[in-house]
Image (cartoon, rainbow, N blue to C red; front, side, top):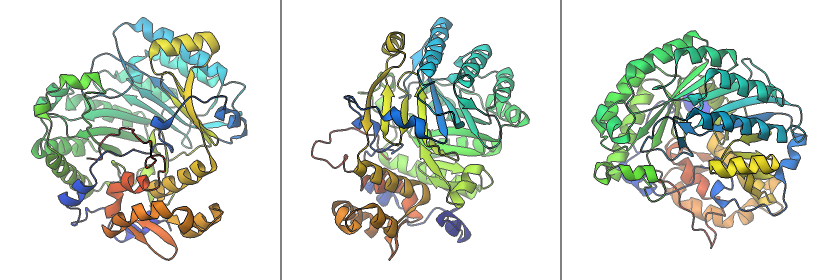
Length: 468
């Protein structure tokens, strides 16, 4: 029985601990990495001769990510790598570059099943149905794509522009998971972020996707948006609960206008205060768990029967650059501008800007411009952090087996950083394990950060979004 099952049997996983006070949330609300990787992507540098992709020949399973950056209109809150355009010719030439880049991997990746395929963006459904078919056909010539219930093929979609006919195309191409960016249903908030979305559009798409056999439908929501308050967010959640998506991601809006130009179009006067954001988070989480959703940690909720919730209870949850997943793979190949790949040896990332990406693909067939070669210490800490974030515990015995010296000696500085979190009831230390408590699920980023030597290094000057 996994830890999450024990917690669920006790009834704790479906309630918000009364001791989760605004004061406690405020104490840990500062900037912190999200740990979709370790080390985090801001640490990547020029690879200087290292080739972490060389171990792709030794994998038994593969994840595939395709970044499609195009959007028809600008959402002011968005911090994604995107290109706003209505000129479809850009997308057509980009598709050719994607397929050319995929060819570069033909002889570098073992012929193993792709257990997870994710199209992200931007708005992947910016592609026409015929080009989506061309993309999947091209990828299928190089990678072992297999439709079925034992793979997870997902796509992000903008419900404002997704056509009903496209759902049929996606289903035929093997996609079984659909993620829609809702953000908020309040008209005033939608106006402030330039993203007008009608709930009836979402309802129709959700119903048709279910009719088409999509196994999981996910909504993205954001709290802390301009003009939002507790009451308006509750009304949005009422609408969402009536639509009953299988999964809900409840993200915190990070207002960083100095880094993301589009956010400068948002009036700072409309941004809720930190205490208002905390009230929103608590209220939203209580409403979702009271409605029966299981809190997985790291902003994610799922209906108890959803595969992600089942995996969490059974201790099978995994995590990669797309977040929590049912289908962990030995490596991930990322295609497209800014896409990140990983193997057992490290990470590599493509050029960020569209012109730089296209020029690199034309010149050498790939667009890798930075990455990270993992050290033995990096591998150890990557394992430890993922154990905490996915399984909510780490075994002292296994730590001792993985270190050449007693783990208390190896992690002396890390354990010292962990003590305040233990004192606050976020982590418990037993004779055999370190265990994330029910309260600690809300602070997984902070707990993981205790073991991040790069974050606490003398030269650390990276900037991260706030936890709240």
